[in-house]
Structure formats: C-alpha cells, structure tokens
Length: 106
Image 1: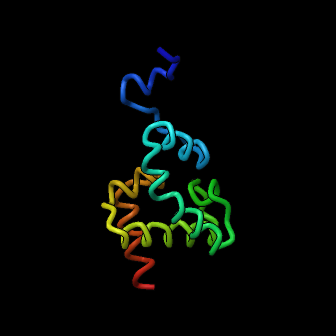
Image 2: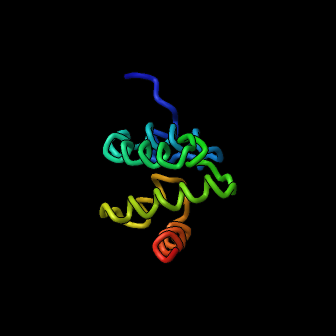
C-alpha cells in the first residue's frame, strides 16, 4: 500500500487557504474534475491575463476577481452545479451564485 496523506484515507480534506493549495487539494481529491474542466480554467486565465493560482486565490484585485467571475459563469454555462463550481474554484456556492449573476448582468 502506498503512503497517502491521512486526509485522503479518511475522505475529509482540510480547507486550504491559498489558490495553489486549493488546486493541489482538488488534484489530490478529484483528479478527473481537473482533467475535465482544467482547460476552461486555463483559457479564462489566458483571456484575462492572470495566472491560475491568482484566479483560484482569495485575491480581491479587480482583474483577478473579474477573471474568477468569468470562470464561474463559464463553468455554470457548461452545466456544472453551483456547489460543484464552488469546490472547483474554492468558493462557497452562494458566492458562486453571486459571481455568476454579477457576470451575466454586467
């Protein structure tokens, strides 16, 4: 048996604080989700000129928050639920709902 972190064996991962840690936790917890939706994260980051770890962080910079809102709207448009988007991006589902609404309204 390979040595795995304890939180993977128990099924409950600690909530990371930084964007790159969130992405890494997602990769450890559900690599298929990142494989399936990672291309969308990459394309939104390139379109807005931000790095992925910035977009998945808690930064409140205008350019970063716009990219994060755009990502939430794109993921919602592709059929993901608000809780699933929240897990992917590292936000609460109600924050995702607000971001999608704000992105769509303008």
